[in-house]
Image (cartoon, rainbow, N blue to C red):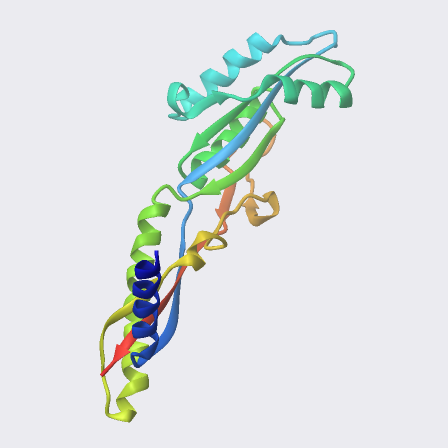
Length: 226
């Protein structure tokens, strides 16, 4: 144990005794979301001409398929109990309800879904959140760029001293464990540009622009100085 302690202390002391330069670098970028999640609630109300949940489900499926949506892969049934409880307490005329989450890949399709479901009598449709499918690959790419940026910074700092850096003593990307991926999950961050179409005319898709997702990476590096 004494030997291990001495070796550990010696390694730490050797590291501290070496001349080094510590710097950090951050890089970021904006990406267009390519995963858009839409919440759909189907309710059967106690009214004279009410449609059953099953009838509305059929209408929804046909409409989504007409828009090119693969309902087997892109549509999932959400938690029934929590949604049923929520809407049952708020709307006493609701007899039965089902909620779904739909995944689409671009804003144009999202707009068509909103209009199409409204046309078949399904109005409880909400844009939930947006994501970027290749986020992990992008993070790695940004880390590499941050390392290169840190190296350039270090070289610029030691150049006036007629010195240079040689090798890396320490690298940390602990900054990337949180707050490096800003996800657009709020409805107010989705901008609806317009909706053209009048009664008795074919409605046009809602023009939607999604706020781009900001991704950033920060690296801390210690370079050895020669």
